[in-house]
Length: 147
Image (tube, rainbow, N blue to C red; front, side):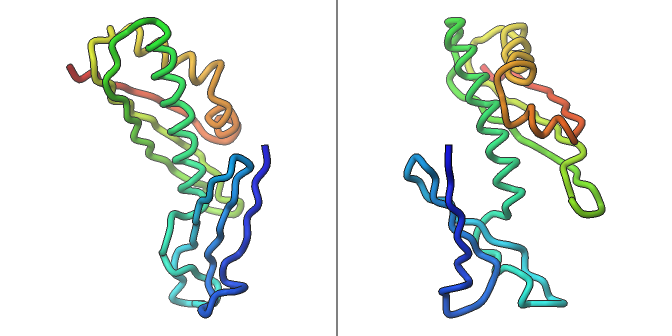
């Protein structure tokens, strides 16, 4: 796997903290920093997600992918799956994630036990993103079923 990340402020008319990631699979992801009123030259323009937001989003996608796949392989009816991630970060640099809670909402008729098992399997065995973040963050999960 590879990715090239380029600073967009180096060639743009306005300096900032925007970045363009080009993935090995041929996709593009734009990221930007938060505006910094005290030091505008160090801040972004709020034009795209922050890099750490993309880490959190990628982790959510990784685990939701697992949950859907596990439930489908178990021949359970899954019509929708979403996961809301809430997090806390360390107060000092490096501001790693210290707590992450994932709340899954699964639509369909999958039994609660199957959803609970799929979430556990994702976190214990399959989701490499949450496994990495679990090195610094306390990971918790919850879920709800919607018919």
